[in-house]
Length: 69
Image (cartoon, rainbow, N blue to C red; front, side, top):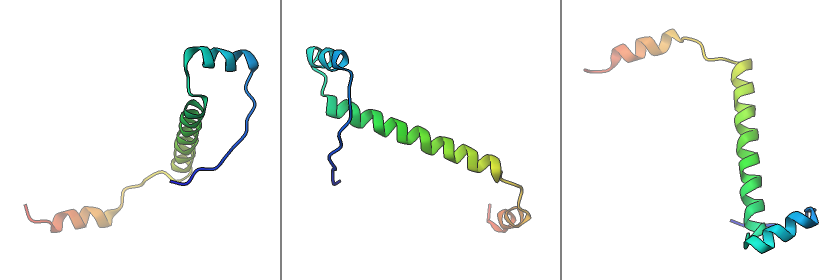
């Protein structure tokens, strides 16, 4: 997967605590952004479902009857 460089600001004290703790700030930022994207997609999916909830479809009831048991 290709990467892109991004710049962000980090509180100086927090940056120092991360350094002292041996935290890879780039890896932590990637993980945080990935979690935020996953949360945003889940929120969008829930909103889309709320706008267009699933409904019973008589076709599938009939299609299920076609299967061999």
